[in-house]
Length: 191
Length: 136
Image 1 (cartoon, chains in turn brown, green):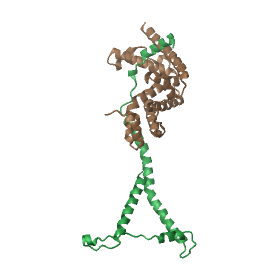
Image 2 (tube, one colour; image 1 turned 90 degrees about the horizontal axis):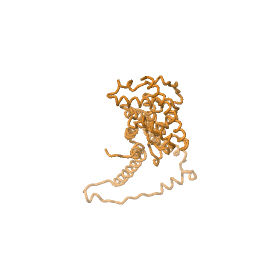
Image 3 (cartoon, one colour; image 1 turned 180 degrees about the vertical axis):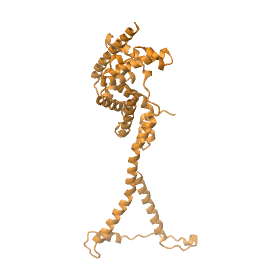
Image 4 (spheres, chains in turn brown, blue; image 1 turned 180 degrees about the horizontal axis):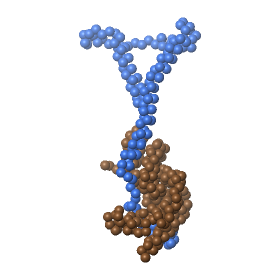
């Protein structure tokens, strides 16, 4: 299939071809879902929120200014939808005891030790993400997973570039502290 | 960024692998499209209903207007508001070119035929124009 830009499909949708929206969804679903999941930390909720975000994007497609990036516009919707949700549904604080101490705990679901180690690291990052606040979680996701620049993050979140740098610095520090604590716990567990 | 900060970022990067992004579940696109369709169908139906009633409503309005105006214009009263308009239409004398088809087809065609053909042509144009407007 020929590669066509988002603008091509958006024009098709605005001309009445609703099915063209499926190309847009297919193209952006994984990154949008990942962003929502990293912020809310729950697969079912992330799916629901990402679907809602796509629907919101579809409804307000006429308001989208073709000059800007569609991806940035869509991530702004996903970010705001998820942040609004998690702010309403505040969860209880996770304790370090909630996290498995070792990669061997993940071996049952993995094919190799290496895979188990990757799963362990991924879960540890998810755990650390859930320990920082909603906004910081969003910023970390956009910076590390979506690999956005601080300029792009500023477009998505509406936070100033300098403020993003400060918030990212704090979030990074908090996450490292959490990771180090878990890793220490792992050492004690092995002794 | 100072060394300490760089070091922290490196540690975090060790744990975060971009390949490990959480992918949307199976059937995600079709679920979104179902919701989009569900949202679109009622609005399309409402639009179609509106378009279906528009032409009869306009015709009814025009008919009512004509009936009302017929009552409002008294016969023979020269100072009535619409009299000058009626007079203008009455003064128009349409004439059509005389075509002698009988000499070509050896048929006797009534003289009104040309008027009928032109009438059909005008109505067709009118119909196309209306179709163009309401289709949009």
